[in-house]
Image (cartoon, rainbow, N blue to C red):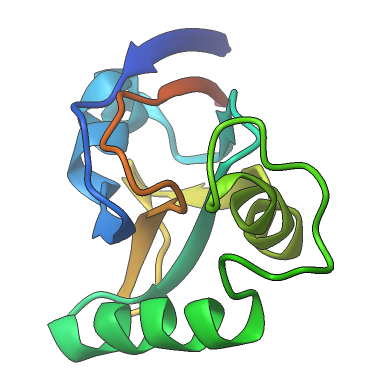
Length: 139
């Protein structure tokens, strides 16, 4: 079975946001699969996806702190700033984390670890809606 859905997330401010439930809710057919793969792709170059701990909100704050230090705004080294000082830093952060995830499906559920959640990594200062393509394959 193959299913593909396109969803628009609500606007999120800059930071790391758990979107696990939004993704799972978009493909309720997961419950019918004994084995499979859930692939999530973000259709943007200034936001990204990752999987990490979802239990402690401090983890998401620390991610934002780290990436802001590693790729700072207003760097004189960046020349692409058409949309403001967060423009090129957002693209670099997105390239570091990546645009897609593949998650195993086992017995009708995503097979994430105990503390794992799916993050939307919003790297722009202005909140904006992001589009995802979600593909489910399995039997």
